[in-house]
Length: 240
Image (cartoon, rainbow, N blue to C red; front, side, top):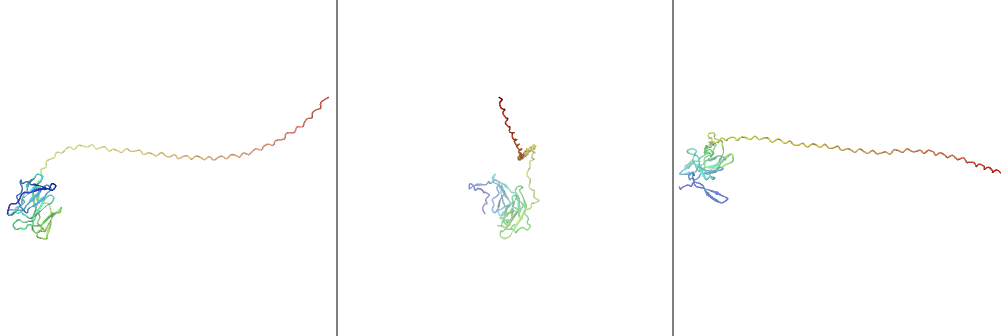
């Protein structure tokens, strides 16, 4: 069998162009391997080469165009034609064959931060197979098919035997906290309530009842007494 490739390329849809991936520390060439996207890296693992299943792989960072090797798990774990899913924090590989003749119903969880592996449980696991499919639902991996119409759901449980290597944490110098003087509470200015001026009820104008004019009883006009008729005095005869 001829050589297997360990080269690749990055495709940019916006410009419809390709850029070659770096080859420094790149994994060896292989086929029937898997690759998952881990949020900022592509993790390539397993496959066949040289008549055996491989348990090696690499993490490719497109930002720096560099490769970092993944740690090997355990002897005899190498395989190809398996499936791989990304859970958000781990890569789970499952099934496949060891190249020779064994269909595998085992798997492993790879943590790229700790660069560590943990075996998946085989309790109630589906039978070994190749050509199957696997998806991550957000909380479980569902495996189905592959020469069979059966499958299984794998629920991830933390492995207490695996302790991620803690990253070195620098001691932070506490920044003195500036005491903030509380802003005085502005009391709202009380607007005096205007007491409405009582409306002066107009004093009703007394209706002047006209006084009854006393009826003047006319006094009787005294009857005029008749003047005494003066009797003419006799004129004396002149004396001779």
